[in-house]
Image (cartoon, rainbow, N blue to C red; front, side, top):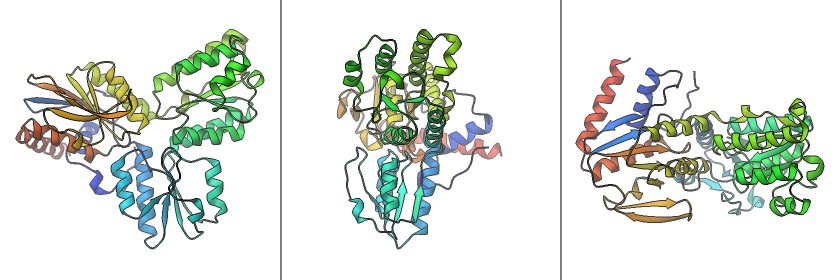
Length: 413
């Protein structure tokens, strides 16, 4: 049974949390990926089976709020954003938590401000060994570590591989906090390199097979390799791990490309000596959320709405999956739905917030596919549903749905 975390009540919800409860009662092993449906006559909202706060996020939030409760009179510092959700980070800030850095690494407060009696929180993404050493040198005793256990699992696997002589290939976005942390931990034990996508995996493959020069290798990867990385000897034995919020299918494809290169170079009979199987490091929540979204897309809809912080990696990948199939709107909260005529949303390709007019087809019913990132509270998705109901004038239908939902839950006890 999954651990129950103590999450502040205002992150819970009436609609989504109860939909999840009812679904979990009927599907205890979480195998049924079919969407839940809110039929409001004019509007039908289909909701992905799995989304929202994952184990790692709930763990981080519980620890962060506990640090506030246990240290009412102390300065509390968070290395960077707790998770990539503005609602959560803003609430922590209003409770007195101070941020030392922005997500891009820009310093907001100097580490020189830290005193040994202060409290420091490590975010869910983890942090680098270099930053940890800086904090420890300050003599700080109270460090609350909210690093996701699945991120730490990647670090432990990297350590195991490094001790066996394998070079670590990290599939991730180099500027993302989690990848920076994983790179820092991995390179402590082994030569390490970060590759962002399938194209870069192919470039690495070409070098392994002797089809790219040393100079070409350095041109592509010079800022993403550990010190003294020697591609001639350091790519003889490799293992692939990932930033846990990347597309799981893409990590598997990256791994397969490099595995085939090692087979081609060293032979299938020698594969285990040159390539380590690391499928066990993939995050279960990433798998569940992405697979649930694929089933949601198969159910068909007119548009998709994905809710999450605009700097959230896992949310952006959900958006990418949707954009392949239908018009998709990536919003951070309900306020982005301005009216029936306008919606403000993040354009991933341009990396800017835009306003789209006439954003949904003029038909009835309109079918909306809805999901959210792993750092998005259920309460926020509730507000999005309520905003949709309001602009389409189906608030009474939503109220009726909620009453029926609660009744079903009570009857199933």
